[in-house]
Image (cartoon, rainbow over all chains, first blue to last red; front, side, top):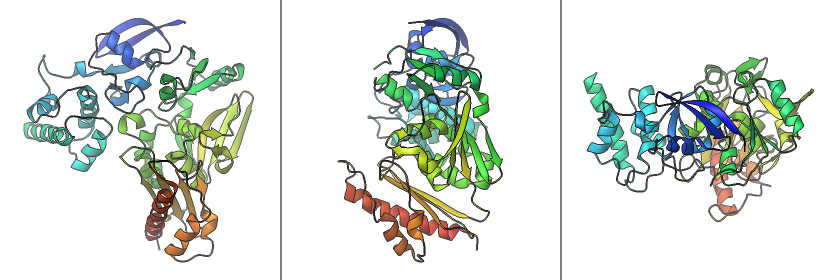
Length: 158
Length: 276
């Protein structure tokens, strides 16, 4: 099939690529070394592949890479400060917001976008947002707690 | 799974898009892709040509025209939630949008895509029927408007003709001071509804009630409410002559009971919300 020449902006780096139109963003990102983009269900249900496109969380398995010329794509590899964990990641670590870790990158990208938009969140809102991601280890309670911990620490530091 | 190969076009103008659709008998329009791409990944859909309309900025607009709220096909679910015109004139649409799937789906999925996909339990087909919407369709050298009631044929089936693109939906704006409500039941947040109901109550017009997720297409049940005064009578009338879909997770008799509850809650809330 025809190859399309595209320029992708991934985690602030520019990539000149030739891709078939049918290539999913999730697969193209993994080929670029972004193996934190986890591929689970490939129909948008599990949320493991969630990345940010121009700041908004989206399923990478429901986008074709060829569509995204000129848009800023952000994966879990962009999180963290100087090689360390950022506030949300540290909170996940501290209160066991993960076990096997398969769902974690997707959750982090959705929750990172949420924390950028909102200074305060009630538990119901956090649970509603988290419900867009399947996690079979934690039972979600620790994920919700991690978000609340990250919010508290951020408020304290401000 | 991965999609089969296809020829990809990303038109920059509406004319270009309509030309591409006219030239192929196996073209799929790609808007948000939140239904089309899963089907392509599973190879339930394998179009030869994909026409990506995401660069058609003219379709990404919300405006008021007389007594109509006109929403472009490319408007994302998420952007309707907080849209000032929607919040001011038709907040019902905001509360419906909030219940669509999950945030990372709503940021991409579009109203036009949802209407054309015509899932029996999707929110926008229900809103279209409830609010007596007109649907704008364009094809090369032609444009028409069709009433929502004539657009939805059945599950995943509409009267969209070959070569046509849905460009906008025109909801009728209820008068100021109207009451409105929407209810749905899902097993988990973001799932397709087992049943849903929406209604609008205005001082100077007959009450409007529509139900979704129950039969293969959204149903306008407003006529059943004529002349009735109490909510229990209205529930009974609205649910009579409805043949609920039947599946193992939501048998027909269960769906009917859920529907009755939702219709009652909806009517009660809309009647309370109406400015006296």
